[in-house]
Length: 357
Image (tube, rainbow, N blue to C red):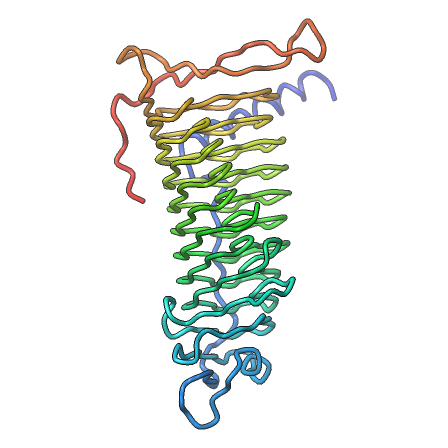
């Protein structure tokens, strides 16, 4: 490739980078697909006193067809089962606080969702073994909302999937070293308005997971990292989250990711870094509140630059001028050594943003 072509490619990439920084959603919209399933089939009942009601959730799932609803009463709760939802159905609990699916010591995920285009809501999921999840999803276009997961090894895990919506779940009290919500090799998913508390990792986006939206979540009191984007994960949006009381980084972007947007988050009272960029390229950190963190921001090794745009920083010594972000990069003189470097938020906000989560 000759020099003029190389320069053209670089200019094109920079123009794209700038356009993303001006319009935060550019190139990272998560498209929600319309379901092809019409949920107007039969309703099968589990628990309760009705004639013909099922006593086990899995039996009702086995007898259901695509488009059916399986409704689970809470008066027979807890249900000691490990279930697989392998069809496009609605699985609905009567009350998320009192309709309980509980593990009982087996080395399995409590709920496995393997059928596309289903809905799962209204349950408490509890008591998985340390190495297993409350809900494990290996299918697409599902809607999982309004559940409680507690005393589980890991919360909700998505693997090799797309176009799932995970929202308004309460996920707390982990007994393992997994995440409250995890995405592995999964793209175009929406993780919205969940509450994750007392896990080792809060929300983990990893291993070629791209074009996901992580927004409006509350991640509090986690043993390691609040929200992590790691391992060739590109064009993800992390926005409008409240991340607090993490023992390490509140938000981490690492391992050769490109064009991830960290936008309008409340990053407050964390023991480690507020935002840590490590081998992150063309990351955009814009309009966030950095308040009372041990260190608000840091970067380590950049191949291409990152943008810090109009964030609020509580550790400013003077009320005007740019905010310096310290970091380290490869030494140009000594192979294998690192030297101190600086990046700048050139026009930081002088007051905190009103970011409702």
